[in-house]
Length: 457
Ligand SMILES: [Cu+2]
Image 1: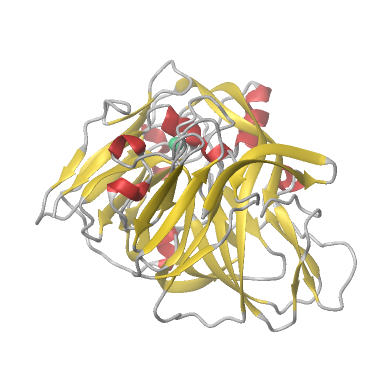
Image 2: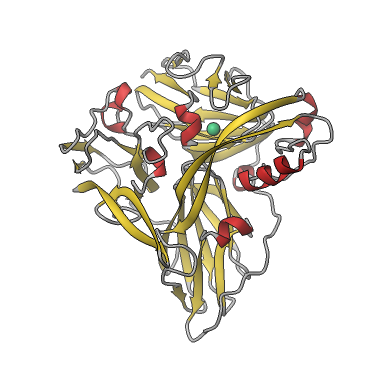
């Protein structure tokens, strides 16, 4: 049973947050079920308005997936609804509210209504001693409109888009606002100015506790810890590092990668998951935290403490290592043709109106894929914000990212970089029906950045 209910909790010493959650805890209870065996989850809603739960990353039918307008009955105010399905595929999934909040930052993914849903595989392939689930989230959202301009003139090459913090600093100087994106495409964007609705946050947390307030993760030398990390942010991409340690990336969005490899920094767009194996071989007390000083200072981190070590937690600066999905894929040389274009744009002169192929949700034309032909989409981001694009009800293979082909990386959410960033994706299963494709930035989704994908048998 999941209970949707209000909660006031202490996120940092003396800082209390009022939100809504599942079963009185942040994150909600870890749901853990074997793959492919029918389950039923009763959801009781203690709130005075209807709500709905989305089973993110699962191949379920539209009538349980969690999108009300595509056929999932909501949980009525003060009512109950039972959702039945077979969890699949195996791996780190999650569940969260899919209530469109509009500009109400106390609804949807701004709330504490999120939790892990781990679908157990028949055979666990990775070997580890422990697993630890870490969910990232922010609190005390405040919506602000930023203005600035960007374009080809003098825009620097960046390994990643700037965070909202950096943008604010940049906007404050009165200089042109560099927004990152694929360097080779920068010159093709015209000079433009814009206003953008964004969220700022007072407090950040890992598993509902700000850095230093929660219990440390206590480890032993030589222990192999599988971190299953979820970015449950409503709007932000996060980068994490653990000084002295490497993350061996085993799975993206819960799906094992063909080419596991070690990195210093893990990056997750809103809605994404990363399964990373860490061998505890650098005794000490460390901060596993955001590479953004401001985010970490506001609480985005957790202390990792070796047995018999005491003292203040150490931080040693943020590696500038870029994050590339293709690093974990198979090398391929194939050129992809026949992809359906999915062009993302911000409506000129608006703060938060977005379109896909020229129209915003619900007016955007559905993308239809009938039987026989492969369902391949080419997502192009013609805006100056990055977009973590999430496809419901399917797993897709990443065929190419920013022009570089790759193979075998299976995901349900892909961050498409600003300024003509591009992702070519192919649906790899045959889940039939109508499913939402949308930006997992809550503000963007509410601003129309969504469309329907129709798949035939
Ligand atoms: Cu977006």
